[in-house]
Amino acid sequence: MAKKGRVFSGARPTGRQHLGNYLGAIQNYVALQNDYDCVYCIVDVHALTTVEMTQELRQNTFEMAVDWLAAGIRPEETILFVQSHVPEVMELHTYLSMVTAIGKLTDLPTFKEKVQQQPENVNYGLLGYPVLMTADIVLYKADVVPVGVDQAPHLEFAREIVRSFNYRYNTKVLVEPQVKHTEVLKVLGTDGKAKMSKSLNNHIELASTPEETSARVKDMVTDPARMKRTDPGNPDICNVFSMHKIFSPAEEVEMIDRECRVAGIGCVDCKKRFAANLNKHLEPFRVKRAELEVKPDYVNDVLKDGSKRARLIAQKTMEEVREAIQLP
Image 1 (tube, one colour):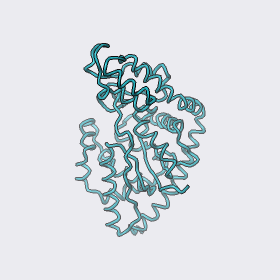
Image 2 (cartoon, rainbow, N blue to C red):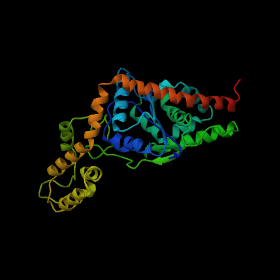
Image 3 (cartoon, helix red, strand yellow):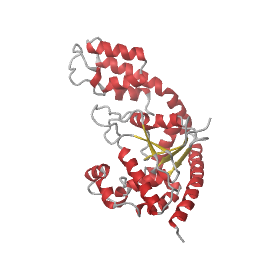
Image 4 (cartoon, one colour):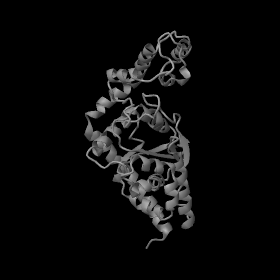
């Protein structure tokens, strides 16, 4: 069956992936392989905008690659590679910066948030992040980019950069990528308040043991108004119940919804049920991950092969870009 086009997406090498990564991106990456030619990138250069100590960068890249492969990324058909292994992206980033207004970069909400988070390290890379992200995408002439709600403004900005480049150089060499929203846009952490994140320690790692997973689930915040077992709860505002709707059988979800409202089931039992269903769902992933973890040469070969295939596309694009600019 003919594919619908090419998809590109990337993520910073944060090491072992958590449930938020899985629901927000990875499961979507796996599903997209059925309909698109997929190019997935571990964006290690982007990480340098916020990471000053790079000792764990290589290991984090390896761990992320292992998780993606264990989740179902198929390297025989999908290009999986590391950003810095395709240097053409740096050249394209430079050219795109020439058609990008600084004022537009400083006005982006995500830049302002990063400035507040790390006022002691406001570097050019942080400001130019959306330009490099645009280079990542258009270098491979991606038709579609799956994004969460927090990245949607960056993708629209990328489309603006493409239009500016094509207009200035009177060309159509760069493709305007289309947005494909992920099915789950935001996954709350175990605290029930903030987005799931390693930095906030409110995450559940995919590679955790069943016992570790159950312990993390046990700490999850439920309905804050339900103080006692005999109090009726409200599943509509319960983070655990939102996870049940994803990982538990429909009949069990219906039972919990009904019984929680009349105090027929307590939060402890509800969490135990969710932990059991989550562990069951993750069991195939954990088996595959254990196989890959002891084959580092295979994982590294996958990334090397992906880089070679990505460079073939990148080199052709850059030939067209240089011709459009009329570089000598």
